[in-house]
Image: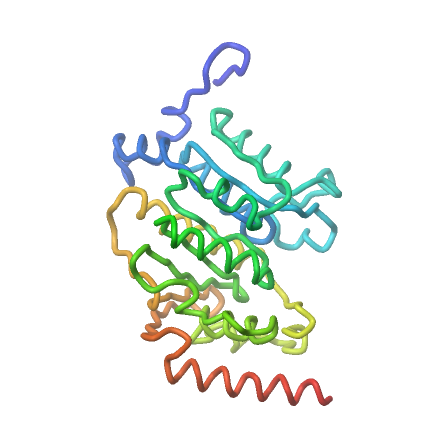
Length: 294
C-alpha cells in the first residue's frame, strides 16, 4: 500500500503490470518521455489519462475551456464536481492523481502563435486532442510539430469507432494531406472529415444524419469513440517512443469501428490532391449547397 506521507511514489510498482508488453528498460524510456496534448475535452482528457497509466513521465497540456453539462456524455473530466472548472486544471489533477511525479506544464489559455513552441518544446510526440472544428489551432500545432521534427498523432471519434493518422517528420505533412490552406471553415471541415475517414465505416449506422451540420459546427459523438481514440493513439505513441512496431504514416490511415466489427486501412497518395479525395470534396460541397437551400 502506498502511503503518500511516508515516502516517494513507487513508480516501478505502479506500472509493473505494463511489463511483459514492454521491457523494464522500455518502461524507463516511457518514464523519460514527454507528450504534448492540445485540447482536453472529448478525446484529449482520455489521451492524457491513458498515457499517464502507460507511465509517461512528462506532459504539456493545453485547453482554455471549462467543463459544462453537454460534455457529460463523452469527456474524461466531465463530472458534477468539475462543472465550471478549467479543463486543463481538472485533467492535470487527474494525471497527477495517477502519478504524482509527473512533470506537468499547463497552458490554460490553449495554444496560439505566442506559445506553441514552448508548448511543444522537448515533446517526444504531439497528440491531437483539439475539437473537430478548432482548425486554426490544429493547423498551427501540426505545422509547428512538423517544423520542430516532432511526430504527431491524431485519432478522430467517429460514431463508435476511430480513425487514426500519424504524421512523421520528413514524410507527408498535415497540410499536404488535408489541404486546409486557403479554405473557409466549412471547406476545412469537409476536407478534414474526408481525410480522416475515406472508408466511412461509421456512416452505415448514423440514424439521424441531420445531427451533423458542418456549417453550424456541430455533430454527435460517443464516449465509446473517444475511448477507442485514446487506446489507439496511445498505442501509436508508445510505438513511436520505443522505436518498434509497424508505423504507417500519412497518407496511410486506419479506421476501427466497434459497432460494425470492422477495421480497414486506407491509402491516399497525394493526400487531398488524390482524385478520389477531390471527387469526394466536390460531391460534399454540392451536398452542402443543397442543404443550405432547404
